[in-house]
Amino acid sequence: MSKQRPEFTQGSFYHIYNRGAQKQKIFKEHSNYLFVLQNLKKYSKEFNLSVIAYCLMPNHYHLLVQQNGEFPAGFLPQRVFNSYTKAFNNSYSHSGTLFEGPYRLKIVDEDDYLIHLCKYIHTNPVKAGLVEYPEAWIYTNYQEFIGLRKGNLFHQAFMDNYFQSREDYQNFVMEDLLDQKMPEGINLYLKSLEAV
Image 1 (cartoon, rainbow, N blue to C red):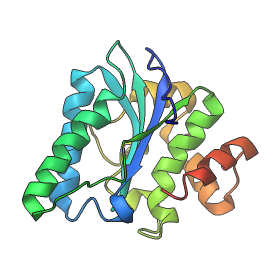
Image 2: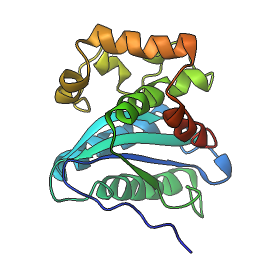
Image 3: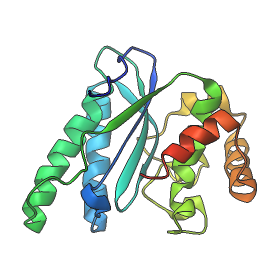
């Protein structure tokens, strides 16, 4: 029996994620990441969605998206990664599926989960051992969060609603990296993502 997806509703936040089939790399070079980022910008605007946080990793991705209008947030991964898969297969003479299955989705309906998930997404490259500090991984919007880079995939209203300043968010992220402490319910959910 297939697991039913949550309903898509205006104003809701969604964690959308997926990984490569057999944990294979889905991004081989810088241009692959750029292709996805350009399409995230394009389709989030077209579908009136806010990309709150994102992280593109060599073999998986995480998106935290808010649905602002009637277009379902699920349109974003469908459009972005369907076109990406076609481009990838064409560029690398790849056949078969690129991802292990359809994207995964979880509605995020509590503020505590929301801010900890945002932090989890931004610290993913550090915890995977790819970089020493989250700002060193350029395929997230963490640099926008802390004011090191301007970008179209940054939602200022989210920052204003949940944090007093950019420094406040940076401290929140760094405390986690130093302490590795999160509320227990959130910890259980985030641990379930470790397989991704």
